[in-house]
Amino acid sequence: MVLAHNTALLPDNELRRYARHLVLPEVGPKGQMRLKAARVLVVGMGGLGCPAVQYLAAAGVGRLTLVDDDKVELTNLQRQPLYGEADLGRSKVEVAAARLRALNSTIRVEALVERVTAANVMELAQQHDLVLDGTDSLVARYLLTDGCHLVGVPLVHGALRRFEGQVALFPPQGPCYRCLFPRPPPPEAIEDCATAGVLGAVPGLLGSLQALEALKWLLGIGPREGRMLLLEGLAGTVQRVVLAQRPDCPLCGESPTITVPAEEQVACQPGELTPGELQAALDSPVPPLLVDLREPWERKVALIPGEELHLPFSKFAELQGELPRQRELLLYCRQGHRSAVVLHRLQQDGRRARHLAGGIEAWLRETGQQELIY
Image (cartoon, rainbow, N blue to C red; front, side):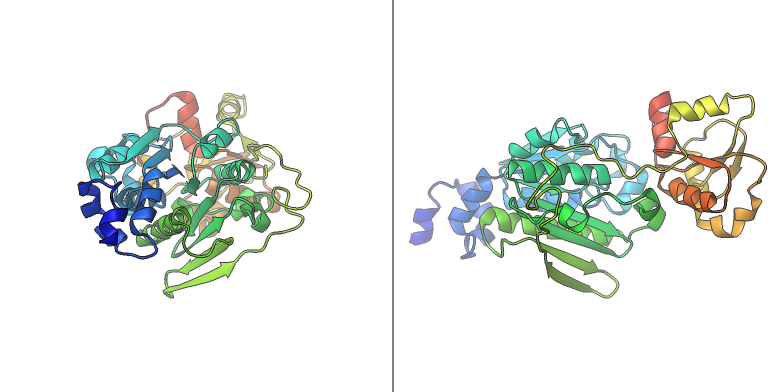
């Protein structure tokens, strides 16, 4: 029997485990061996990374490297069911690695509790056959784009918002993410999940699509050109768009200007404060008025000491009149996204205001206060 001859290199337990793969002509024993030899880097173990790594591990991808420095928070559980209530406060990658090893003991899973930076992105990428981007950070997204292209490794991208999202395959030769978005947008154009919300099943579907794109690439099946899948969850549609390479792309174009990855920040906004600068402002003879833009439930986690006004971002438009005009305002939220939006509006209105870059999370990290329990 041909199947028996071609599966000689797979042990009996793997023949049974991957039986549904082996009967697929597009996969078969040779394809399963390719997956077993494959190395995949997954950056970000949130709503996208969780479903993606489960399917990659179950499919028999031989080596998975998980990168994330976050810990499990209560709000994660709505869309990241790889974690449970008993995991709150634990490292995401360490919890995920343990779950994946329990799922498939025949693969190797490495957990790296760190962030992707300009210093490590190229080394990480070149040690793998494919990189899967499950981050929600624009800085990390551009770093992965640059690093993967410069070392010639395919990148599977994912992003989401509310009921919609996108998954894209960027081949080593291009097109790349910068063909679509050459530079990061200003902060007021960015809405994170905490601000915009997301239906929990949406990242589950998108992460699964990322895993599918990764597996097809590793197996050498399906189209190889750059493409993007656009999900509209409410309408129940997925649109496929073939991506074109831009001749003037700064990374993969005809005359590239980006030759090394750089931690290109989101465009700075006048009036940003670091946690240290915030404390100095509060200690000044005429301190500004703190304006907490978080929702009431978020305030149970931690507060920044000082004279304060609570104005939830969700009610900002109707309560904006409560802000005093004679005081400088110092805005903060959880991660700095909502406060950046409000700062832009207030600056357009001629108000004296600044905001805390990175939000209360950055302040807690720098001051060594209690750990977040969001």
